[in-house]
Image (tube, rainbow, N blue to C red; front, side, top):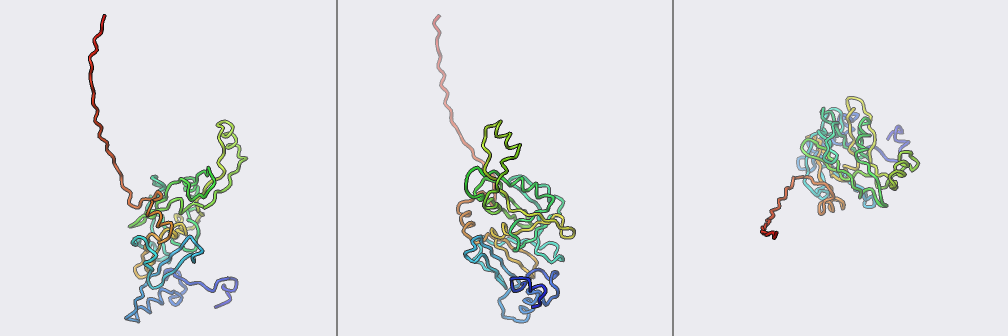
Length: 289
């Protein structure tokens, strides 16, 4: 390897798995080389796919990349596929048709300009800089007791793609620990004095980061990082230019499927009817004058 740029890095090299538009040449594209191997060997079982598993429990290895296919043992639910958007940019990105926070649909993607890049190297959800305040304020919540922010009551986030919806609960997108609140804020002090209430000890905040990308990638570009990739096992199909999403086989997802934590992938309205029988007795009362 050359000294530039690898001399200053602690890792051994870059294993590029992006689409060929981002490769220096076809020789530097692993998947392009794999395509040549699959085409030249008739009895190979390899396919032009790779699967990514990211686990929250770093002690168990933290993750896995399956090359030439994907690991079905890492899936709790079948894969659902979304086509790659803007293939000429070279990124594994999908069109985001709609974003819902709880039952509220945001206006951000109504013009059809929202895209989401699936990125294993990002620990947060990337949000366009002009929308990050709106989304943050919709998700952050007070922490009234000691504990983890993963267990707070906050709305689910739904990213509607072409063909499927990705859903995240607070356990997926919240920072684990609350951020300290400034107790000397005049507005908070005034509220405490007038209402006699106690200021919550901290604020639970979502794992969001600002994204400021110009055209053609931006401006409405989202980064689908670890909050998405730890909930969903993802499969990248280089031949058909599509990305598959399925619930990852981890302890949290297994528990949520057994006892849902607020997310219902196939939400339905439930109507209950109650029939009541009422018996009325009439008694005549005679007045004595």
